[in-house]
Image 1 (cartoon, rainbow, N blue to C red):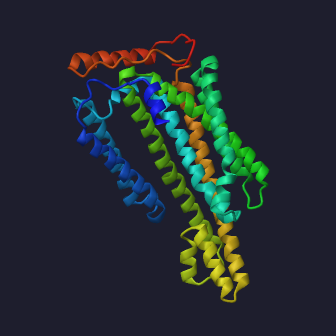
Image 2: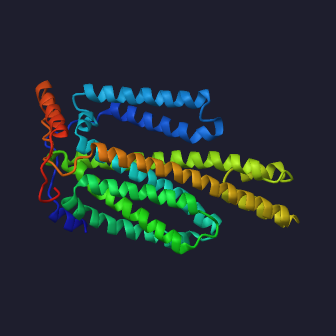
Image 3: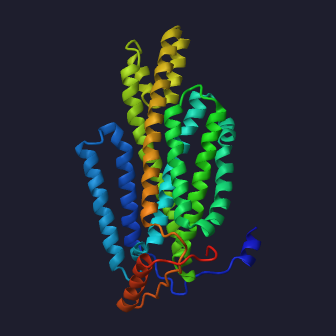
Length: 364
C-alpha cells in the first residue's frame, strides 16, 4: 500500500517551508494542557471555585498570546489569517464538534456496555460496529451529496443527526434497553458523523492552495485532536460530577466509608466494591450499592448526552450561519516574503469569505 501511495499520490511539498515555530508550539501546548487539566479537575474542586476559574482565565490568556504570536511571526506554526475564510473556519469548527461528540460517545458507551450491560472488551467492540459501518457509509454518501446539494446542507444535516441521536439516547437510556434500539441509535449517529466529517474535511483542504496542503492537513488533524480531547474532558467531567452527586444522594448509609470512597471513583469501581461487600456476607447491601451506582451512572450518561447534543446543535447553527453552500476556489497563500504578500493573502481570504460562490461541478 505504501508503494502504491508513493506512485499514485502527487507531491504537495511547500518549496518555501520554514523552520519550526518553537514559541508557537510551546504556547499552543501550554494552552491545551492547562485547559484540559482544569476541565478534568473541575468536578473535584468545583466548577465555580477560584481554582477552576483561574485555570480557565489563564487558558484564555495563553490562547490570546498564541494568536498574537502567530500573527506577528514571520513563519508561524499556524497562519491564523486562514480562519478569516469562512469555508475554512466553519469547516474546522464542524470537524471539531464532530470529534468532540465522537470521543464523548466512546467514553460513555464503552462503560455502559462493559459495566451496565456486562459485555466483555471484545463483545463491546463488536456491539459498537454499527457506528463504524454507518460512518463509512455516511462518509461516501456525504462527499457525493455535497456536490449536488451543497456542503452547508450536508454538514448541517449531519450535525443535526448527531444532536438527535444524543437526545434520543438521553430519553431512552436504561439498563435493559433493547440492543436493536441501541443499534438504530448508533446507525443514526454514524451517518451523522460521516455526513459531517467528510465534506467538512474537503472544505478545509479545498480552501487553500495545493502547495499549502500540509497546512490544511495539519489543521484538519488538529481539529480532530482538539475536539476529541475536549470531548473526553468536558463530557467526562460533566458525567463525573453528576455521577458523584447522585451516588452520594442514593447510596445506602450503611455502606462502609472505604467502600463508599471506592464507589465514587467510577461505576466499575462501585461494582467491584459491591461484589466485595456481598462476598463478606452482606448480599443485600452489595446489591443496593450496585443498584445505586447503576442509577447514578445512567443519570450521568443522560446529562452527558444532553451536553454533547447541545454542542452538536450549536455546531449545526454555526454551519448554517457561516459555512458556504458550495465549494469555492482555494485561497492562494503567497510566499511569506513581506507585508505585501501577507496583505494580499489576507485580502483574498476575506474576499472569498464575503463573496457568493457559484456552484462547482465537483468537489475539489
